[in-house]
Image (cartoon, rainbow, N blue to C red):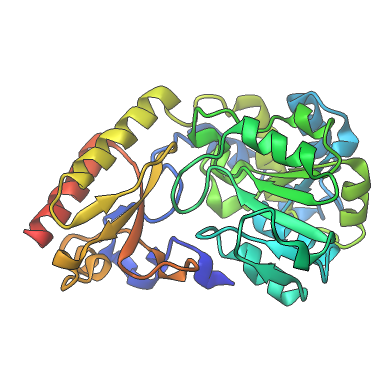
Amino acid sequence: MTRGRGDDAYRYGKKIKLDFSANVYNHADLTGLQQHLAANMDCIRRYPEPEAYELEWKLSEYLDIPREYVMVTNGCTEAIYLLAQLYRGFASVIPQPTFSEYANACRIHKHIISYENTDSLSHLGEDRIYWLCNPNNPSGNVLMKGFMDYMVRSHRQYMYIVDQSFEHYTKSKLFTPHDILQHPNLIVLHSMTQQYAVPGLRLGYITASPSVINRLRSKRHPWSVSSVAITAGLYLLQHGQGILPAMDDYLGEAERLRTALKDIPGIRMFESKSTFMLGFVEDTAKNIDLKQSLIQQYGILIRDCSTFEGLTSDYFRVMAQLPEENDQLVAAIRELLS
């Protein structure tokens, strides 16, 4: 399971000076959250609620949807594995390349897995799920909401699990919580981890029809979300605005980074509608192990995409950071490939 994760800085000790490998903004101002947690650490003396009911209630108010449509999870990863368990034995269509945990979870729970993305999959039957990451990881591309809405409306016999973990790193239109009320065959995953740049807390939630939520609750073990994560989540819902940079500015900087990388001979960059992007080391530069060379010579970490189905170590992913850091990444790659 953990091979699908991007941030492996722990493997390199103090060598890493700049980390572009995880899809998280590294410079979010978490001072207020840290002070709040420090002042409320007595929460660790008590068991949390068996399920995060108070946080779910606050989320339902924040999202303006009924409470029974929301379930808090230990990050989106718990949601993925719970859903694979709930639909054990189904056929799962997982267009590639995408986040590897969908397929990992489906294999554990005996799904029939197809990596095709067409509608002509009659051999799979109607007990079928489509797993869609939007914005997609690792590419950062976004499927148009109109297209997504058409698919869900036109094929109500299938379930659609749409992972919107990176919804706060794009300006493209995506499913809203209110869309859940109209689509009983739609399940949307959300990440507070990404929304507030707190990957260490492991905090996410599912929005889905009450029938799906109730069945999921019967599958999970109690106390899966810690007291610290719940305390943080309640604080962030009230005070978390402005933790990420203004998205117009951040997306502009990401596009500047993508253009600068694309201009390096031997590097090909793919289109992205988010703040992270997928690149490729072309044949002329394949004598360089880009990830290891960046670590050893510059202390810079990027994401090696070889753990994504259909990709090799020639593919890499980076998340835009501060302009001066992005410039250091571009300069290092240019020097390595010159």
